[in-house]
Length: 107
Image (cartoon, helix red, strand yellow):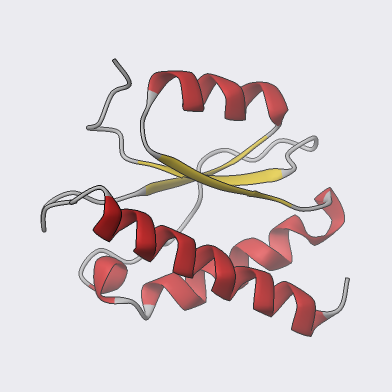
């Protein structure tokens, strides 16, 4: 995947997170936690937390996408106060970036 495609996908993912923040009425002290996950971990997170925002990419491009996502999101007001330094644990079979709010448990 080319750099431009990865950068575009990172911007679209950041847009989705910003939209979800407004759509679900996050307060100023609420935020997102981002993790790299495989399909089973993604399903587990989706069953435990709501809302979630995820995107899938091949594992070769995942690290590059995660770096672009960090850069783009750290420039947005949501993450400016508490910038993303790292993602949750990465496994060799990770293929998703998933964002969730650890305070908002799925009921």
